[in-house]
Image 1 (cartoon, one colour):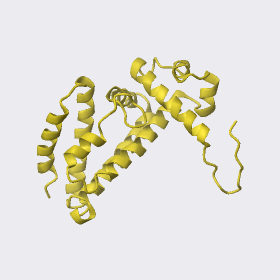
Image 2 (cartoon, helix red, strand yellow):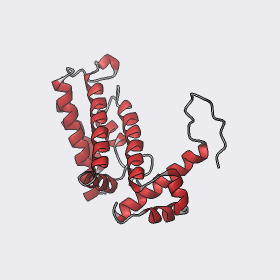
Image 3 (cartoon, helix red, strand yellow):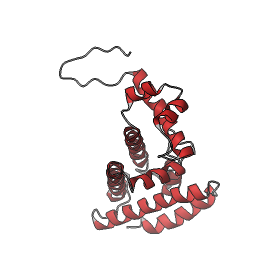
Amino acid sequence: MDAAVSTPGVERKPGARATAQRSRILRAAQQCFVEKGFHAAGMAAIAQAAGMSPGLIYRYFKSKNEIILAIIEQQLGLARARIGELHGAEDLAAGITRAFQATGEGDERGISAPLFLEMSAEATRDPQIATAIREFDSTVRADIEHVLSRSPKQGGYGLTAGSAAAGRALLLICLLDGLKVREAREPHLDRKLLRAALAELLNELLTP
């Protein structure tokens, strides 16, 4: 068991071992969800994929839903960091294809296209997951709108804050979601062709 000194009034952060164990469980869960789907992948299957006992899994996550919500939270942090990298990007098309391209493994670096589809489908059935994904989308869209509305001197794209930036941020979200679906259906998509097509589209979309 991780040893830690408790300080009154200060929230204790998870120890390094606990953080590593949680990450291990989340990687295993993502693998199971992609291979089996959410409903077929139970805690026992996740435990087996993680090389742990089911009892140890429950020490870190009380339920499968809690694991799914943790994956969504993890991906939100990653998405926000990647959007931040778009500030001042000289080649936004290259930045988007690089920043939002899935690794295909669904690990901490990026969510795989098949898992994206599983999560989207589950959101239509589970209110708790639907709420988490709506909050995810709202936060990401606001971050993109912020990038678009900043002046070029501030590393943005000079769109008018409000309807112009908000509308184009929504279109970019739709575009990115569509790319995930396309990646699932066409995993060997020509990246050079995609980048060229995005450059042409974004030139029009992001012109003030």
